[in-house]
Amino acid sequence: MKITSILCTGTYYSPWFPYAIASIYKKSDKIIVVNAGHYLYNFNRGVWNIPLTRASDEIKFLDVNGKVLEIKNALFDNSFTNLPRKYPVLTQVEMRTAKDIYNYDVRGIVMSIATRAAFLSNADWVHKIDHDQVMYNDWNKYNGGSYMSYQYEFGNRVEDLTFVDMSEPFNDGTFTYKPYEEDWYQGSGSPALKSGGENERLKQEKFHSAHLRYCKPLICNDEEWRQHLYEFLLWRDYNNYVGVFNENLKKRVNDSIDKTLKEYAVVYPKSAIRLPDIAYLDSLEDIRKTLT
Image 1 (cartoon, rainbow, N blue to C red):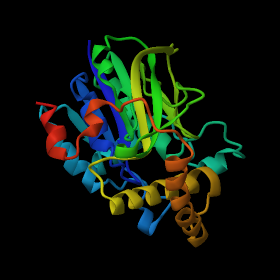
Image 2 (image 1 turned 180 degrees about the vertical axis):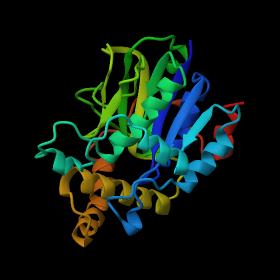
Image 3 (image 1 turned 90 degrees about the vertical axis):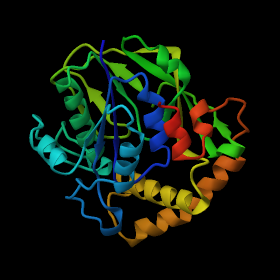
Image 4 (image 1 turned 60 degrees about the horizontal axis):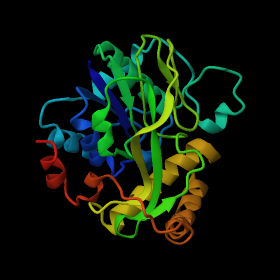
């Protein structure tokens, strides 16, 4: 049985990216990382093939057993050209009023490239995870099947962890599926898998994941964390809510950063649930040691 994990990074860097890679490394036979997106500091909505250098460097450092295929630059451009579905690329704002039923956003494109690469790698099962999600150790007991992981959402700093009481713990968790040639991902919110075959995923509590987009890791200083939040919120608000990339968008995001930090520190209760063990490490070197 061959398990291929897929994840994408680009447009903004998540400091949880190396933790995500490490949490799936032992169980995955292959890991496909699509590294491409916009450049937020000279934004051009028609250019989405720019890789994150930091993510590439961390892949090289962490890939001790040669499991990772990174799709970027010419390989990304070729993969995009060869996507069988030639749909328009829209923001989520545009999707709400689009006449075209079928469309991508940029996240849908990169995930479609990832799942196609997984199919071409002859994977028996695909595990889809985001660059700000980390698997618990129970994932290492996975032995095939279409499942959704039970996900916990966290905020604040790791040292002062707060827990968000998720009303739907399966809403945005990682998931596994059997790959088909016709699989593709549409955008809108979390990119949704449009399967070419039967892929109903079971909701269960065998496997757990931590969603950490609003949680500051030990590996990250305050300046880096603020930059991450700025880039994450800039992309989210542009794609999901505003649809126009301008100075008003940047001001909106800057004004919301402090509010976001305070919200997760004050509104939510201290967490009685621990993060995955790997999430408490504070250096790339220590993360790498868990893989050898």
